[in-house]
View 1 (cartoon, rainbow, N blue to C red):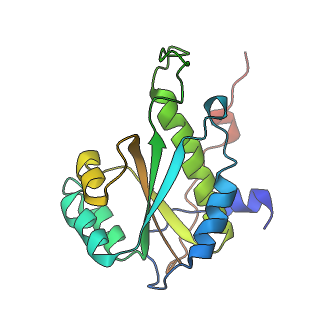
View 2 (tube, rainbow, N blue to C red):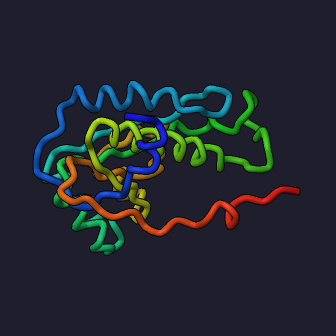
View 3 (tube, rainbow, N blue to C red):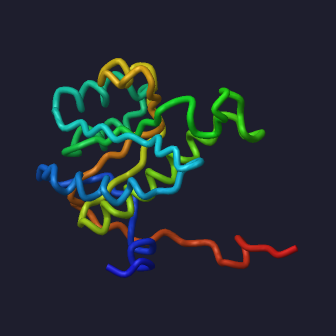
Length: 180
């Protein structure tokens, strides 16, 4: 797949076939996503794949602050990828101070880069996904048992697409780009 075709073709997918995703596919996706840039090459992104239907339902029913739209997406997805990051590294100096005025927000910035790379590679592998942001971080962390040195950045519902959504209207370059 051509690079620009991948960027232009990937869509948020919220309806999936029930087909299980082979672990080798996840291995290939993370193999590529590990090349995502990160603060001082800190490589703090981690990926936890949840496939157990009972745990998926628990997350959907108890950990989404009542947001049924995301709950329905998770309940019918064959897997949910939790993107976490190792805390206290991205954006920090060795002495624990912040490197910039952005403080600890670099952790989420790096997680966002990793999540986008993960999503693009998943699309190139024939999968669809949607990055989810509405959830109760503490409840998901407890339900899944995320290690204490990591924080949950986002969740990605993933599977083989059962829909092919149209491209939404995009803003013109002139609305997005300026020169000074």
